[in-house]
Length: 243
View: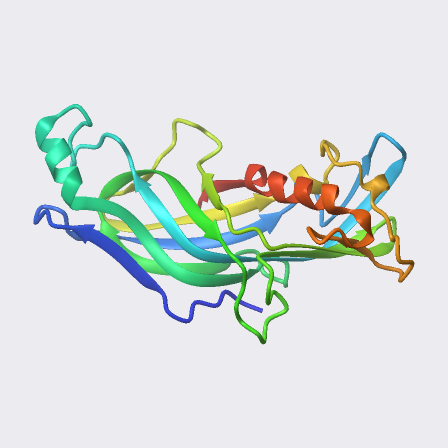
């Protein structure tokens, strides 16, 4: 599987002649664990072993937010800077982007485009339900598969919310200043499934007895609470990495 972008469009709305497409940004995505793809950790009930084999997400669009202050645009308190900002919006990459992040890849290319030299303080992406009927993600925005104590589980969610992510170091910004720049949207799955997780996976049930623990917002197998916890932790697991 690979990133699918049937119609990728970089939207740059700026009427300032001094702002030109002066640099190139390559956006990538990746998922990893702190140690290995198989994590052992203690919950409040017992020792659980979690193994993740599939992690897929569907992103509708990605937006790079211009910093409140940079040399090109002027400060937010500067009148000329404020006037210029009325004519310049943030940068958007139009998807959809269907990402399969544990299918033998270290990382996946999302998009690459020339864009204005500027300082971008964070990236926003809109997760949305996949409409590709040929995809395993169809009707879902997140899909995770694996095992809990060797019993198969399937988690999915159909959330369509917006995620805001930044670098781990709050002082870092994405700076385009000529040349090429690569940044990666990275998901640290240890935050969801690792030793420090707030989720007690020993409570995950196979209520219908079909041999698969189903975790989803429809409350199949009575695991809706866990489904919502996984969905809420996904944003916490995401940050930006320079390459």
